Length: 524
Ligand code: ME8
Image 1 (cartoon, protein in one colour):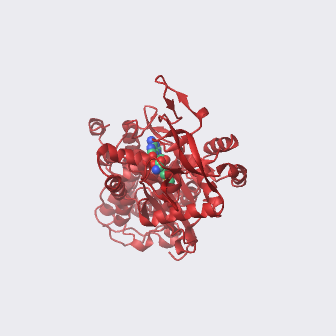
Image 2 (image 1 turned 90 degrees about the horizontal axis):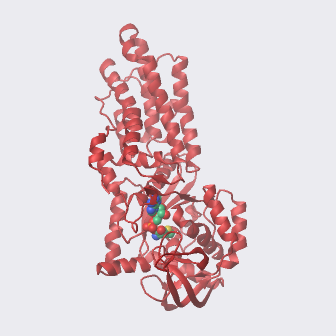
Image 3 (image 1 turned 60 degrees about the vertical axis):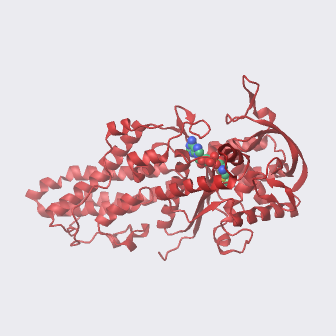
């Protein structure tokens, strides 16, 4: 569309390639995909980045355990993430791998910039490190288990580490960070995560060890090849590598930096809301506009994770419910930001109630009636009653405003709640107006009612595209909406359904899930 509203840059975390992706990774990526698609349809120029985090001790250990080289290992698992993005209908504009040359160049450039700015010094590190989290911990953050092992708050085992290391002067950024959080109240969301970060920073920041010498699977430190960069400084840089950094005059960098949203899980909020902004300030670069940390999918209350071994494969979900219904369920079920326990039972209930019986049934019964009783063409718009106008106002005039407002603060579940209310209103309207009864006594009114329904389904089909792209496409195809009339700018009277347009015999777009099948097929 010509009415460009500006640029929008959204990122997922880059995922560790120590194992295959699970539902948790899919969740973050789908959430970002919905925002990216929504913004594109709303007239923004969007850059959506995802990718894989391929260096560090954890990946090296995973490769060693399999008896392959780290590069072979990362090539294999990166492909798993790429394939899944394809299967889940993810519309990313780029996929970054930290083993790519463009990335090594960017990470080294950022390091050199920090060094030139006097932010890095050499010393030696002795302290606790959790390979599983690739994170350093202070003694007072740890607990001791029965075997005497030191355990991080995440549950990861820590080991004592002593080695020569370069340090970043993180302690110098305590006050500037606190001021930044205060001046930018929406920088860290949701509020609960912000409170957690502020209290962590107020507790005092210690300088951060940013290089390792015990292994060499990483980006080499410029001018000291004995050291590789700490995997988090390497990984965080990916967000600017993809825009062309270190060329800050690159077109993409100028258009898309600073990012609008870095979407992450709450496990990695500290890296994104403390270390990353400190690195950026220290390198004289602008800070992202928002870090949104969502909650976890849990299984019986425990975080779903590769190391715990309680993961749900996204492929199982897709096999049972299909891609669109899986995407819808993930974002509808749990208030975004909170944790949610995964349940097959709830998935089936939600999908059947809101997709099969809700939008699916609305479309199927309305279009079937048009096909059967209006000679297979859309009727002309008739005189509108107060009920007709109220429904059209709700769906064509008001719905997008609500969805836009909720998605701008990452409340996917609220945006979908408004959508469901609109579908319920249309289903209520069809029951009240009973066009099947009007067929005998008042055919012109039947046609007027069916017209209102067709127009409402058009607007609903357009609005739901970001969440269920394939199903929405099928629905819009059945409504004969031209491909160049499917943006949100077309949700107006000017592009309303035209009487006389021929339609085909409609086909359901959301199959009902058989409960027993879902249960029988239940997988770990
Ligand atoms: O942390 N529920 O990679 P990672 C919801 N490489 N989301 C979950 C989840 C769960 N149970 N489990 C994982 C890393 N996630 C680093 C990131 S970024 C510069 C580097 C999602 O493979 C969630 O987004 O451990 C979480 O933050 C991310 O996967 C962690 O992926």
